[in-house]
Image (tube, rainbow, N blue to C red; front, side, top):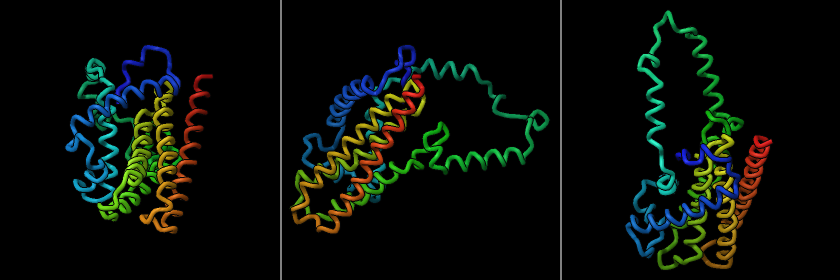
Length: 256
């Protein structure tokens, strides 16, 4: 996502970002209705994704990518920034003659192995070189969404209902909002946006818990599966809450 429009002003906190993101969500929802193959919403989006995807994981990842792209449409990128960056580099900067390169190959190998270790470490998931794939709460929510999709897909279409659709949809949104927040990064000037997006994942987790409770007394979930879903979702919700607090602590420390 591009945040050039916010670079020159004061640093926004999570509440200012939240207000801005709410406006973006309204616009992205209008865009979604415009481009969707089912503009009237007769078929739930998650069912369409399942029909068009290789498997449930592919459907979850496609949902996340679409959410990021729709929101990203309302963060205009300043092309001048790219031009300025290009002007600062010369093609020769990317190539080194052996005699000019200050490190031997062993040094390079040690550095690369160290960076690879960082990328695989949970401790560095909130680092500029980290990956969301190492963020445990994201992996948990994505895996949970895959299992919920498998359950939803197994239900006879005759028994599909609004509580089912709401539960599956809110479950998908959790990992999408976590990914949206992570895409902001952890620099102080955009950290408030990260927090605001991550809070939306927390809200969706709470909504999914409510949706799940509405399904408790139905015939679509046996007691064993209900408790499995509830326990996993409850833990995910709590872990997101801890993650939000960690982001807030980082923001407050940076503002001191």
